[in-house]
Length: 161
Image (tube, rainbow, N blue to C red):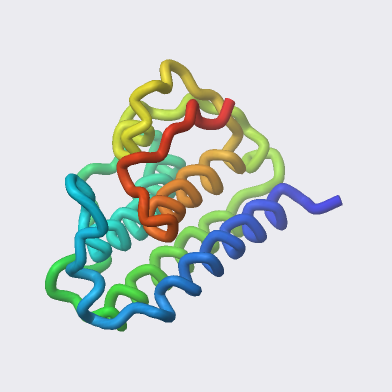
């Protein structure tokens, strides 16, 4: 049976593999493209994915939702290579954080802060409780899925419980 650490890292690797398949087909033109009315540009969606890693790890480290972190890249002016590098560096920091936790910390159950759900537009969530494993994988996975599925802003879920 896989350890909590192995599970988290495998889940993050799987979602990143899906994202990487999409990124492989992009050029510097597509990140400025808006897939649909009311949606963010592809570049903004990529920034959202990178920022979810930063925000979730920041919250887990400090117990407060960070709102003043510097973006890893500029969604409008960065090249696709710079965007990919920003995604890679934020994920590397997330994996480093996961490696710093012991199994007990990975299994700890905490209440999620409202901004986590709000940022993903999951307004139907009244209360969510999940382990650090679910927080790390679900938050980053949902942000990744919003980009790779082309349906940012239309994800409907009640979240992990």
